[in-house]
Image 1 (cartoon, rainbow, N blue to C red):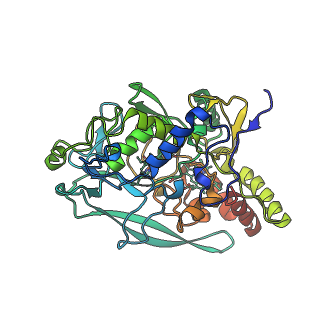
Image 2 (tube, rainbow, N blue to C red):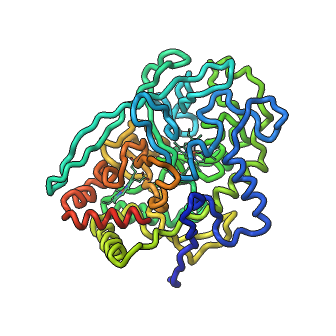
Image 3 (spheres, rainbow, N blue to C red):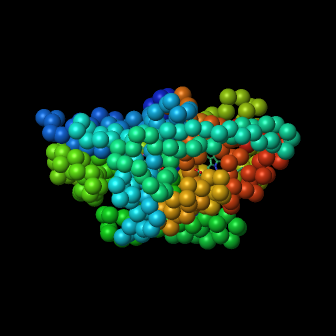
Length: 434
Ligand code: HEC
Ligand code: HEC
C-alpha cells in the first residue's frame, strides 16, 4: 500500500475553530459554503412571512435554528436538574415494532421525537424533565468518582398520556469533519466490522433507510449510525428539530391526530428548497476537523505520548480508531491516499445495560451505540461552558465517560480503572488533547 498522508485539519484554536472549511474549498463552492453557514445559524420564522427564504418553522419543533443545539458547531450538554430546560438534548420516541422501512415505529400520537415547542395555535408536545441519581464508584487505587444516571420524564404532555413508549435521550454532537467521515468507503467499514468481530469488540454496521435512493444502506450519522448520508441527516434534522420540509421529507411533522398542527399554513412545498439543502450539505461536508492541541511543554508532550500508548494498550483504539483511510467523496473529491484521526470506526457496539436506551434503531439494538469521534475534544469547552459526554450527556468528564463503558468495552474500562494513577492521567491528557 502506498504511504498515506493525513487529511488536512484546521490549526484554528479560537471560538471559530469548528467553523473553518477544509483547505482547498473550490471557488465554485465558496458561495454555497457561506450560504449554508447562514442557513445553519439562521432563526426560522412562522409561515407565511415576507421573508420567504426561511419561513415555515414548525408547526411543531424543538428549536428555531440548527446552531441552537450545535453551539459553535460543537457538542451540547444535558440539563443539570429538573428545573433546567433541555437545550441540546432531545427525546426520540417510538413504540414496539418497526416502520415500513425497518426503522423505529413512531408513537401514533407524538411521532418519533418529542417536540417541546410549537407555533401559536398548536399545543406543544410536552417538556423533558431530567433528574439525576448520583453514585460513587471507586477506582482500583481507591480514588472515588461520582457518576450520575439520568431519569427522564415528560411534563405537561400536550396530547394526552404517552402510554407505553420507547424513549431515547440524545445530546447534539459536534458537526465538523462530517464530509471526511462520509469519505470512508463502505468496504473499509465492512473490513473494520470483520476485524472488530474477530477481536471481540463486536462492531457492526447499521443498515438504514435512505430516502434519496429509496434503498437500505449503511448508516454513519446519528448516535446509533441511524442516518445514511449527510444530506439525509440534514433533511431529518430540518424535519424533526425545526419542522421544515424538504423534497426528501415533504410531509409536515404532524401525526394524523394532531389536527391543529395539520391545518397550519406551510412555508412552501418544500419549505427548504433543494438549493438550500445543497448549500447546507456543502457547508457541513467541508467543515474541517481541528488538529490536536499543540503540547504546551516537553513534559505535557511526554505525557500525551504515554497516554497515546495507553490508549492502544487499554484497547480504546480498537473502537476509537486512530486512523481511517479515505476514498472518493461527491463534494470533497478523491481523497484516496489520505487518512483521518477521528477516533471512531463508525460502527455500533454493545455498550452494556447501563448505557442501554432499550430503543432499537434499524439494526442497532437498545444496547448498541456508534463509537463517537473523539477529535475536537480539546476545544469543546471553548464552544460551550459545559460539555456532556455519552449519548445523553450524563458524563461530565472524559473519565466519567470511560467508567460508564460496558458490554464489549468493559475490558477496556477495567484496564483503565485498574491502571496506576499516572497512566490514567496520561491517558486523559492524550484524549483531552485531541
Ligand atoms: C434540539 C436540538 C437539535 C437541533 C435544533 C438540531 N440538532 Fe442536529 N443533532 C441533535 C441530536 C440530539 C443529534 C443526534 C441525533 C440522533 O442520534 O439521532 C444530532 C445530530 C446531527 C448531525 C449528525 C452528526 C453526527 O455526528 O452523526 C448533524 C449533521 C446535524 N445534527 C445537523 C443539524 C442541522 C443541519 C440542524 C438544523 C436543521 C440541526 N442539526 C438541528 C440535536 C439537534
Ligand atoms: C467496544 C468499543 C469501545 C471501546 C473499546 C472504547 N469505547 Fe469509548 N465509546 C464507545 C461507544 C460506542 C461510545 C458511545 C456510548 C454512548 O454514547 O452511550 C463511547 C464513548 C466514549 C467517550 C465519550 C465521547 C463523546 O463524545 O461523548 C469517550 C471520551 C470514550 N468513549 C473514550 C474511550 C476510552 C479512553 C477508551 C479506552 C479506555 C474507550 N473509549 C474504549 C466505544 C468504545
